[in-house]
Image 1 (cartoon, helix red, strand yellow):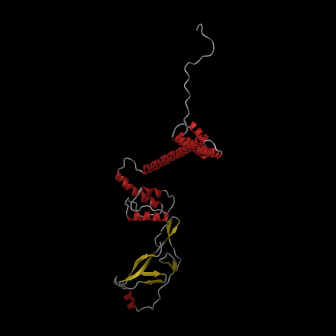
Image 2 (cartoon, helix red, strand yellow; image 1 turned 180 degrees about the vertical axis):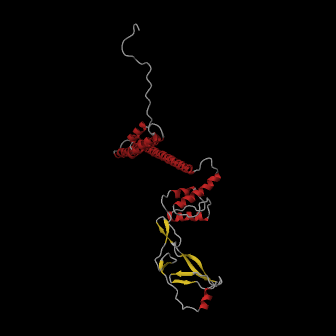
Length: 336
């Protein structure tokens, strides 16, 4: 344009400032700076902290700490002035100063004492304010921790919850079934997985408590119990085999005894003891002995124990009395 001046272009409207990068967690930064300042605990340090963080929860704590230091400094200064005034009063009295000078010294000493008392009160107030701020900080941190626990618990329940389209009845049924499945996985249950929390299921959970060192409630199938069993990646309960079987890794195999040996009640192979032989009977008696006998007179069963094997007496029968160990059942002879 005619009449315009040469030179570079001048911007009349300042350019928009560049986007500021997302700031880091200010509370965490202020907390770290506050803890560092608290370790030093001098007035210049607190002044620097307040200058850097002029507002916020930790700024209020820093100001309270600074006021506390200032109150202590004022108290010390007032105490020193009071001491100096008393010394001056004593000096003037000793030198025989005039009454006016003594009165003036006494007035100064009184004022200094008054200032010292005020400084003491200010210190107490500053300490109370700092304590209140610390209590507020502790309460805030405790509240945050409690909220974190509640959130973690909600997430845990949500992770274990069934899909939204299932009814409450389905959730009640599936929880016992899931717990029965997990108890079988860790070797604590051999019962059927039917979704019924019956005595067998409660016994299985009690067995898990015994071998896992826990105290879960066995009366009901709970989410806590399911989570505890799921957390075990290997077998918890030992493998239990019936009589005539023994544990071989993760399965039960049949016990085989050598010729001339039999398996006793303790799942041990012992030497077979045959009953004493008798003379051959006459044919007539032999036929009578081989003829069928009433069921009530002879059972045809043989009792074997640690002393050997023998036939069951007439009119008697074998009965399982209990277990000598976790692998073998004991049998006794019962006669009516």
